[in-house]
Image (tube, rainbow, N blue to C red):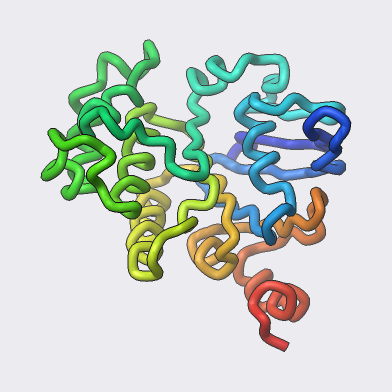
Length: 238
C-alpha cells in the first residue's frame, strides 16, 4: 500500500477559534480509516480541512506526496477526493437520477457516466426503482444511499464520509455500514468520521480517537475496540 493522504501537525480553526492541534492522520491506498470521537471533538473540521473549506494555520496535508493545502477545493475533487457531508446534501427538488448525474461533472468521469450510473444502481437497487422521483421523497436512509451513490459517480480514489449514521434508525445504520463494508471489499479507500465508534471500527482497518481537537490514540481497529480506556469513555463499559 502507498501513502495516499497524510495530515502532519495540522492546526486549523475558524478565525480566532482554534479547533485542531497538531493532528497527524494517514490513509493508505486501499484501507478504511475511522476517525471517532464525541460531539465537538473536531472531526468535521478535519474533513473540512481536507476538502479545502477550512485553511490550515500550520502543518501540512499531502496527497500522494503533493501539497494538497495549496490547491482549491474543486481541484481536490478532480484529484479524486469525494466527501459526503453531514446532512447528506441531496438536492430535494431534483430527481434521484439528476442528483446522481451531478456527481459525474468532472472531465475524468463525464465519459463514464452511463457505466457509473449502472454501478450505482446495482449497488443501490432502491435508487433505480425511484430514479425518476424527487430526492426529497426519499427516506433518510435512502437519501444517505443517494449521497453515497452521488459520491461514487465521481469515481473517487478516497471516499470521506462525515457521520453516515447521523439521524438514522438502527436498522438503517446497519444497512449503510453493510454497504460501506461491501465497498471496502471491492477495494475502496475510505476515511469515515463517525460518532458510532463500534460501527466505524468494525469496518475500518485502523482508527484515530479525537478529543478536543487532538489525536489522543491511534491503533488498529480491533485494538481500539478492546482498549479499556476507549471502552470506558465511549462504550460505557468499565
